[in-house]
Amino acid sequence: MAKARLNELYTSKLRADLQKKLSLDNVMEVPRVTKIVVNVGVKEAVSDSRILQHVAKVVAAITGQLPVQTHAKKSIAGFKIREGMPLGVMVTLRKRNMYEFLDRLINVALPNVRDFRGVSAKLDRRGNYNLGIKEWTVFPEAGSEVGNKVYGMNITICTSTDNDQHASTLLESFNMPFRSNVKEKK
Image (cartoon, rainbow, N blue to C red):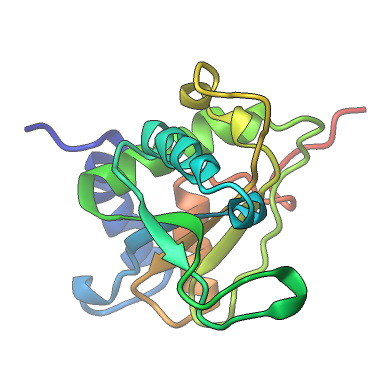
């Protein structure tokens, strides 16, 4: 099986470039993407659990992997939520699926966002990047699956480094469109 395009690029060119740019002695110190977690919360699942099946089907089409249901950790009477009630779906992507999803996210989905001016360059001080997308319709795979309701998703890109500067350099080398790098159209 052939490697994903971004994985091939990383192993052949970017890893050596990052080692020089970050002045790291050992190639094992070079930051890499370890996993991507896609999470969709569905507040309507409290009243109708069939909605969760539709959301799971769309997330599976977007990520290429079956999602797992997430459940409430505590009961909250004001929101009519009981402990253990299914409230969303999540997918943890690794290896080939991770690189293919990251490629589609950077090169297809983010440019489809309306009035796109780049994403925030802020990381979580542990070398991980969180990105919220308001509508899953930016992914072409969701186009045929969209029903009457559109949901947002949270995407977490986990890296092997604890240094935000190194993780930011890694994501920039994958052409992540950070606001500071995107040219303003006038």
